[in-house]
Amino acid sequence: MAGRSPHPFSPVDAVPLEQLEQKPGHLIRRAQQIAVAVFMEECAELDLTPMQYAALTAIGVQPGIDATRLSQLIALDRSTTGSVLERLEAKALVVREESREDRRIKLLRLSDAGRALQRKAEAPVQRAQQRIVAPLSAGERKTFMRLLAQLVESNNALSRAPAAPGGRHREGAPASASGAAPASGHPTDNTTWRRRIP
Image (cartoon, rainbow, N blue to C red):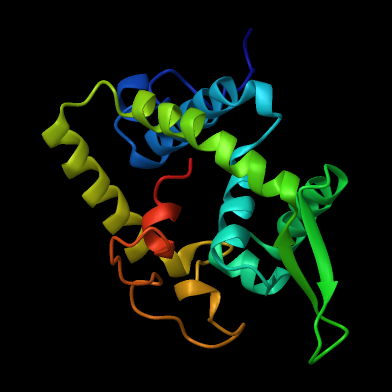
């Protein structure tokens, strides 16, 4: 119709899908979707989410930590950490106790049921991790994990909830350059287990 202005967005202005598939942010989002879907499928009988598993693992590694340190250790904001803890408490998997030094602080530990679930979850969680990287060869997996860890640690400060080394970082204090604890390879090393969690 005469006098009508052209549509502000023409096909020429649109971003080709091929370009979208070449953007790292888009691919990382899709990889996260896949990782969560595989985790939930493997852990369906346990009624456990990736974030709940991360919290259980961190509390099991460092019994007696508080919610603030937990949020720093698993790189979740305080609000999300609070929601995760509420669900774990409702399932009787986590217990909060008053600190002897400061009664305002609640310390976290796993209940017997929490420890049992954590042990039971290890096999399906490991299967999930193996399925996620199954399309890659053994050499490619090592390269992928090395580059993924480098990407995450180098950009840690850009996160809405940056991870702190071992949960010892005080809010407002500068973190280390990488924002992650050195990987010692020991089972209790925070960086080692955190990289395995989708």
